[in-house]
Image (tube, rainbow over all chains, first blue to last red; front, side, top):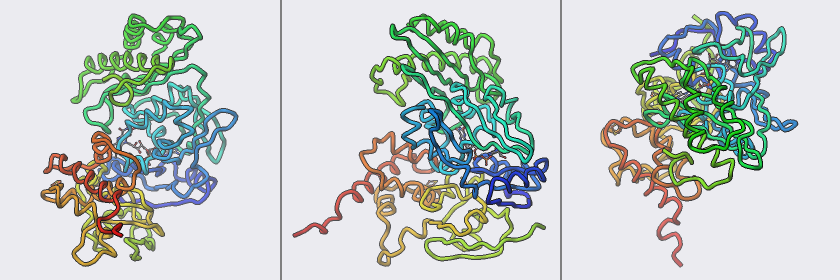
Length: 301
Length: 169
Ligand SMILES: Cc1cc2nc3c(=O)[nH]c(=O)nc-3n(C[C@H](O)[C@H](O)[C@H](O)COP(=O)(O)OP(=O)(O)OC[C@H]3O[C@@H](n4cnc5c(N)ncnc54)[C@H](O)[C@@H]3O)c2cc1C
Ligand code: FES
Ligand code: FES
């Protein structure tokens, strides 16, 4: 349970980090919060020859609003975003998703960039960022580019980032008026990775019908997936129990989750349906400004 | 063998320095280099919470940090809790654990104390559910947690209430 030998680099500027990454990208790893990487090192499941520590790169931290959009630096700690009033007021889906991520001690170190770059299929933030149609900003010594979140995840722990690329930040557009949000998941114990979950944003028109819907699923596939059929089924509809049930059925029509010892594929599929149903109901309630029920996290158990 | 690095880590106000391999975990630096064995190590992959310390005032896992990352930083471990107190006196949180039987074997206790110390200063009421969430990142195989919840409540009461006698006219 001790990490293997590696060469340690702790650059003080992004440019320095990019040069190191260009040199060592193939046999190197970036170290952000270390809350996923260090366990892998301790188990020796990862044996990078070089470790490039991003923790001195102050310029990669911080949460700002620019031209209405949210800009999150990759090295912003999960706990910083969890306590950000700007995020809670304008992008509450992210705040709610974070309440399910690990534990306070882990969120004090874990970063937003690391949570996205790690591409864990059971992680909450990639799912929430997918529902929000976010973009990631990426830099290398060669170039700079922006990737739509829908083009980022390839499979389990794999993204379209090149070995010499550094994720520098995440951008989220403003959420329209009259939008309700909900992040719902089921895990065996609070703070564990979830078996299934859903992130929903519902925008209602002035008559209370659905104008726009975004539904992203956790645990339905090795990457976050958008339930586009379910989203389309909701648009134009009045959100009642029947519409919710139909959308939840549509959401799982095409998914084939991977079963394991924690839950069979069939169980996970059904779980996704229930999570979508609860999330739509909660988002609808919030879009209408109805009071939160007494139970946990504002979502009916 | 990669180069060793010189680190200076302030632990409970005292500076510990040494030449370390970059792969040395902070938990091992604390225990083996600084000789402060109050910080326990259970799982070494972030799950159990036994190794929790405070880095610049925030509770973190010392098994998921490298000693080189703590260079020039302030670390607080369980040993620091009684610093400045009269001999034999315990920190209010330790005293509450003692009185409510918040520990049995004690293996998990230093981690709980480091996680929960900042919770004593949180403003407002905390429900039982909220207290349980605060301690969800630490595992205890003995107590069943009830008495740890009781300890947090007792310590919060004492810390927020003026100490008895202090207000006597
Ligand atoms: C006990 C425990 C429970 C947990 N439970 C949950 C949970 O319920 N939900 C959840 O979502 N997470 C959970 N986590 C993981 C935690 O949220 C991690 O912090 C997070 O997934 C990774 O962020 P990090 O900053 O720690 O990344 P690191 O561990 O430092 O890095 C992870 C990977 O991302 C790469 N990387 C990091 N930053 C960048 C960047 N800027 N550009 C390119 N690549 C980068 C690294 O090279 C590495 O491959 C848990 C962790 C532990 C130890
Ligand atoms: S030893 Fe660090 S969390 Fe278990
Ligand atoms: S008292 Fe024994 S593990 Fe907690």
